[in-house]
Amino acid sequence: MVVKREVVKRNTWQREAVREALELTDGFISAQALHATLHATGSPIGLATVYRALADLAGEGDADSLQSPEGESIYRACSTTGHHHHLICRNCGLTVEIAADAVETWAQSMAAEHGFTQAAHVVDVFGLCPNCSAAASARP
Image 1 (cartoon, rainbow, N blue to C red):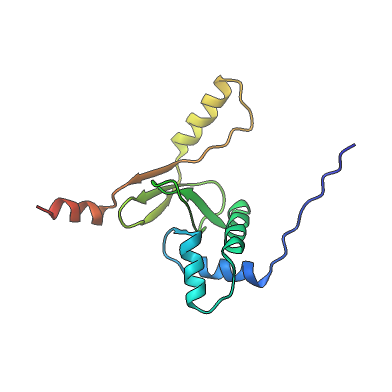
Image 2: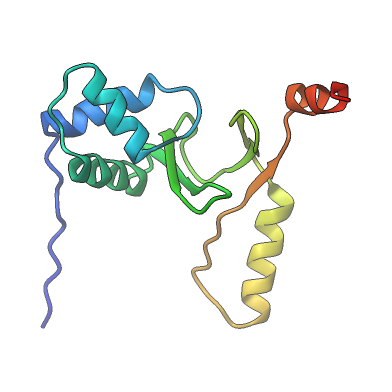
């Protein structure tokens, strides 16, 4: 018989420092950039610790995590609880959390059609926000 134990993460000062720095950040940020921000304020926290804390926060739903168009994992403090999607500006990083009922219906339908259960998905739409679109149009 296999007994599973729930692992409870301690709320260490390092984890709290990462959480607070993430909450003070506008938009998404990489672990390296967040680490640099923490070091600029005098924090001795290590880069590996920042990576672990961000992964834990994302796993618990306290942070959003996605891959940038360059393939790097980036994070931001989550302002919406529960499942949601994002519109993300490729230029300035502006992020808008959106509900996408049509995507939810389609994902469940596709999974069921192919015999999949407990389906999960991630949908992030990258484009240019209105300000960046206007700036791009104004350039000669």
